[in-house]
Length: 140
Length: 114
Image 1 (cartoon, each protein chain N blue to C red):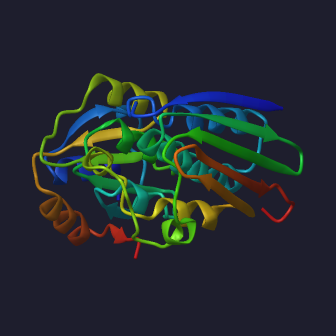
Image 2 (cartoon, each protein chain N blue to C red; image 1 turned 45 degrees about the horizontal axis):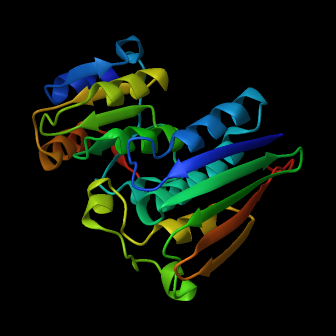
């Protein structure tokens, strides 16, 4: 099953609505709550990143019996130094993003902690792509 | 601690979820930083926050947090209340500060997450 969402940069009123939809779908097909939480926490952080930093983006979620694979692509400023962006506490977020309760430099590392595979690529002034997978195993 | 006891201890007003007032919760976490809330592994807890916007409710939804307490009587918008209701949450607000709410609830036996 594949779910697709278009995300508008800067629109905090809708930030998280794609993650919410994915959560409902995973619940409907009886994925375990532990797996659902890992997927949606990672996805929500990444969705907020698109809203906070990019002009627009797309989220594609592939739900398979063994895994949930999520790809987020955005058009935006890109990340000049990914290693630095991955460090806890490093942030380029605007005051508006901080007012929404984010922008403390915790998002990317929290995403990585919740997923089984994590790959981020970025080109400055073009955009960023994040690929991540959460395995659905019997040892949930 | 019973949700109804929490509401009376902090002079709370129930915005939605009054059908869950007999539920019990053991732990609480107080934060305005939603990324910090999203790192919590525990689920059955009360979130105490001064951040009154749609993202505090979204964060609770993603984190499987059913109980949210907004401090300092900050305005709760209709969008927040609707999302909380849709997610089967109990949304409470209190006139007290985060420090006072935390102190009262800690004294009454709610446990910290860390």
